Image (cartoon, rainbow, N blue to C red; front, top):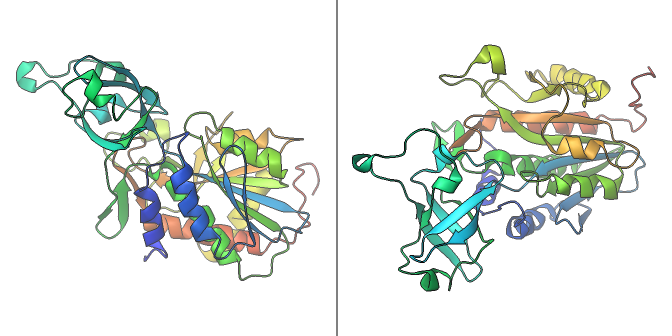
Length: 352
């Protein structure tokens, strides 16, 4: 399946967007969305929100976060080596030997995450990011401090790749794919007669505190909200499907089931999928979803939420992998679902 506007997705994926430093990617997102949105809104958290049919009383908030996991510099030694902590869910074993781009206060600078040679014993047993370091080639603390300071952020230097012209692999597909999806849903709805207001938000800070989603929902007070994120695919070797479920790339969008999810929204999404002949998959989120949905749900007087996720292999690694077919089907599902809403839907589970 050919992914529409794939170049825009690749542009997002190639733009560093560590959590708390999303300005560059948000500007690119807004430049794209302003072509078809009625209005672009922003807020003090740094969210970017494209709006259609603002006058409607029934408001749907779509949230896809644009931030990615990162490294944060926390120490510089006398020899110019940089030590770091996690900004989000960094897997230290995936970091070993990686090339990084430090978003330095003075300029972007390249470094490598050093690893003890196997000849010298290698890395043994369990370890954490505190046991790793970045080598930028500096000879001293004074030299590297002319580029980098404590608190600067770094991301893996990893460009997106196409696998068999079917999948995309790279860093930060969690969740620049979601920011892409909500933008494309808005674009495809822009030429339709809508009975509801649509607010497509590229949210910030999900990987660290989900504060962006809280700001967006608290400010907009939507009637309902849908988080568009990624979830764990289990269709590769050595994954325990009995424990983690059976979720496959090319298997279609994933609907969450659990206490936080409004059952009516899920039922309407399932009906839409059936009408479109789109297969859906399911994940269990018994108490919390671990996504923007959790924060949006608990704003104001409470917001009914659903979570529609993209299956993703190798979560929080430099080679996260998704299917372009799943992306297109999620966009199609959400477009048709919203386009066919009357604006009179009742989300109260106790009222038929």
